Image (cartoon, rainbow, N blue to C red; front, side):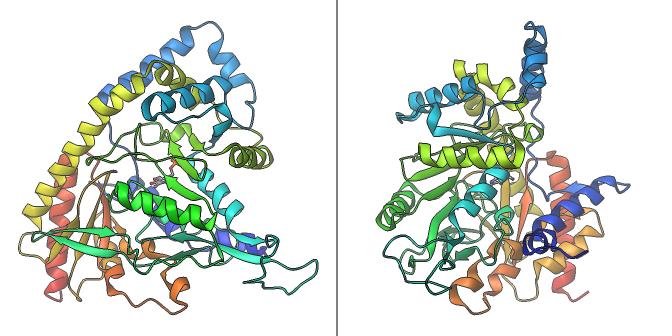
Length: 440
Ligand code: PLP
């Protein structure tokens, strides 16, 4: 079969496809499994009870169930949910949002797919802009815009979302070392240049894969830079506040007319409801709504139905702060203790766990290549994600193959699963790394 460029791009062997394939196969294989790979939220009994309660309320409430599932929604989302979200964010953060600032997508993965392709790729130059022209003048003239990731590693799920070529440029972070086994990445503002072919800046905060939370100062700098260049700042808040609130350090959320904030119902425990939420200026929301109508007609509504009363009453804030946040913080601490135990004597470091549900581990030794480690661990039903996939865009920025060995020395692990499983997974990782270091 001959595919178009779009087809070739999306059917090639992407990191995310390999990851999802491996997760699926590992799930089906017999024997004990140590699933430290994907982004699944943990099982929280109180949250399961809450979802069950909400479903029972929907079933008991006249024909809410039938009407909810039996009609196409508007492509922007359910009016009552949009209003509830706007009010919640206004109450919490003193923003000035209305329903026209909120748009729903079928998962925030889809939200970013839409946004990246609206803001990067080939486009007509703005009036007076000729720099970066690729096709001369006349009807075929165009500029090719890119998304700037101000630091990598960044979320693997973005890497192949642009339907053209090389949608992302990124740069290395500054590393600050903390104690014998800690480190933290920071944006290297001294090297951050924003050429005219940048269509938007994007960060995940908290960051997948590292668990980093960009500081308020870093966010304010990025906001200023974006406004100065008149390009939007995309902030992926899938793990952030006010829900799921997987955030373990103080951090102020930021929104203004130039910021497009992505949220999700996945990490509060509803990944299969496929509900993403975009908060942006009305022009952005109109554009996303138009793409929704063409690609999906409308969005799934079950997530919005389940959540609406919880958003209206503020219960979602309470459970996020009192149940979800402590659950993940404890799991993170426990996994770090297990790591210190099973990796003792090895050259390991872990990124400061400031948010999200991952630990980002770095073996600072030339003999450890985490893609190799990943393959060896897969044989033992331990699934991690090798680091190299999270460093996309570096080569595009320098126009040279990036030679940073660090990208092959890190891996991501999900700590949300059962602590005994995580502990045993880390034990096997420790054993395997020891074998690799001894050349066996
Ligand atoms: N953004 C980040 C940073 C993520 O980690 C994920 C999923 O793991 C997504 C977006 C996509 O989430 P969903 O499409 O389930 O809302």
